[in-house]
Image 1 (tube, rainbow, N blue to C red):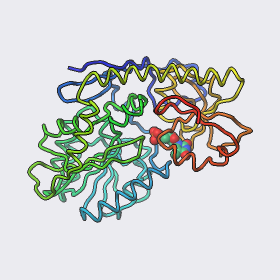
Image 2 (cartoon, rainbow, N blue to C red):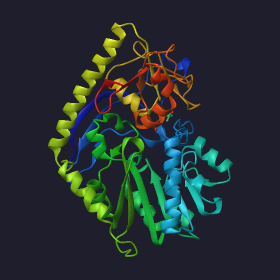
Image 3 (cartoon, rainbow, N blue to C red):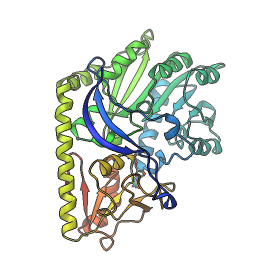
Image 4 (tube, rainbow, N blue to C red):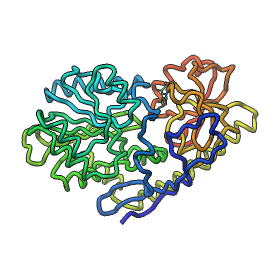
Length: 393
Ligand code: TMP
């Protein structure tokens, strides 16, 4: 039974950017409520949206927009080649190919249901199936040759039916084959009061203790965990069949579990405390923005992320406070953020004569962005962030 702990209000679909001619149309909204399951420690949103409504032929998010993500995928591919020497690799949710492009074309397969993205990798010569990962696709792909490494980053959190996923993985992995999952870490989300990790597509934010329980049901187990910096702090789980004794259990697994328990991720009271902090964060962000607007200063946004959608709609911040957002993603440019209806403009290097304050929508790329915008910062330009608590930097 799910126990509710956080109500983020009525929210539009986070990646449904609005075209100018549809600005006056009524948007579809849903109640964004987050709950905790004390039995399996899983944290998830309670009202889910049919996947076909979110992952279609107009999916705007591209992994390759960020240098941080490109580097992270490249480094991981080097590690995979060295450690596991796979003959065949498959990525579930291959997006625009930021990961698979690091492998030879004849030894990697992409699976990407969003047709606009699958088209990109297919065009570049990578075998890509534009379908949802399921048992029938797994059978089709692995009929002749089993897969040695299945990788999936920021995708399992989007998929409601675990059973189908893990059955398909089990069917298609070779005897020594492994699964690598990478998703935002619940511990980091709680520590950073990053409530914007919750939106329609992020059904779950995983902890190691919850994933362990889920995998148990399907006879899989985690044999290593790496804590990475991507997406505001993620965990990369290395998973094998329980009967596969080829890989030893790394002490990192127990270490992560102990830390998560120390931080109370197995207790409902932790989530109630988190919800109180979220409420405080909202109040404080509204105050910060109000004060700037009272002084008649301009605010623009940086990185029109799906996460921003949760923040802006929860805090009821709109185009009266934030003039526009800069973003590098061509699909988002000249459209409007769902709910808040703030325009997204083509990215230009920040200049103090354009704005004094910049709301950091893409806070998960803070390091990369601050490096890129050092001239703006040097000239006295300021950023507003809500992570870990609302402040001006
Ligand atoms: P994400 O937080 O969901 O990964 O989305 C990041 C968004 O931020 C994506 O739309 C691209 C955008 N972005 C920029 O516009 N400039 C940048 O320098 C970076 C790193 C990201």
